[in-house]
Image (cartoon, rainbow, N blue to C red; front, side, top):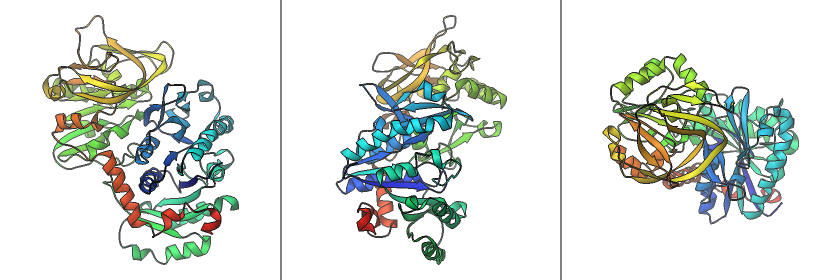
Length: 490
């Protein structure tokens, strides 16, 4: 393929810490003066970012690979995550290949499409291997799901293709870590087991010396050393790959911000900066009790707006949201949340569903076949009330939506408060209610300074902290040793 070296992070389960560790490795190797790129053959997430795609068009990739590219000091692009599955319901996902929706594969049964997707993903891996010194690869779920192994191209098929040095990570905080590591290792065929170069125990709390003789016994059984014990670290600053995986409220007393956590919420990584704000308590709300009493309410993006709006109503949350707005408290809707705040959702192409909106903004949204993807330079106009601090701010963000939203012709107009660099209206205000299509606002220093009078750690400082952490906690020489040839490692 090339002389590039591949290092792959596998997990014994979902949520074991693969994305976090892969991001740290990207910055660690970049700090050694190496040209580094991330890769994940297929991601399943509704957290996506807009990046350069094919033929001068924009595309979308999973947020984890977006952050990994930035950690590697590279421009994110679609080859880094050639296949993205965006769940629309429990049994169906939108299939995005090289940044663009593939309608045919979206409607192809899963087992039939797997081989086709691998043939689309493999050239991207080869290209990145040819252009870089190191490719840091992230697996998905577990590589040892024996019912799926024959069609799983994201884990060991990718590892074999790249001849990657693999780390296998387990979340010891959940219990059963040694069994997970041993069982995963033993269920792999021998050629795949041979690629596992080290075990990593993640999220450990306590005295690491008490782990003995577990790591030694595990190495005796498998021949694989435990190369790192990573202490629990909740405040590293990187967004969770799976959104509300860590859904405990952040912070203590202070400003209470509640994000409505409907079933198909999306782009939750953009709220990570709020979790780090002093004097802010951020929580995910799924019930009346969790939403009542909030100072702010945020309706985030959604991959199934009509269905999530129906869920919201079924929980009775629409009444609390209406009361919140009537009391003049700040209410923010972003993308799908904006669409919910309007009067109605129109779906002539049967993409999402028709539905009445919450009626808190005098807007109508129609879903179009073509998804709009673009990074945007943003300009706020005059705003009032709690949102007045954003007036005249220029910043940036990104748009990713099927809906096109306009003023309702029969209602008093909302105040247009936000334009993109194409001059299009993408934000509206009525009283304390603000809705916009721009994602990523809380990642922008001018917005955080205006709304909260403070700054949060920059992404670059987060990446540096991650690299420092693994440099400290991995055994000496292991990380650079993974870049040696298989012969030299043995």
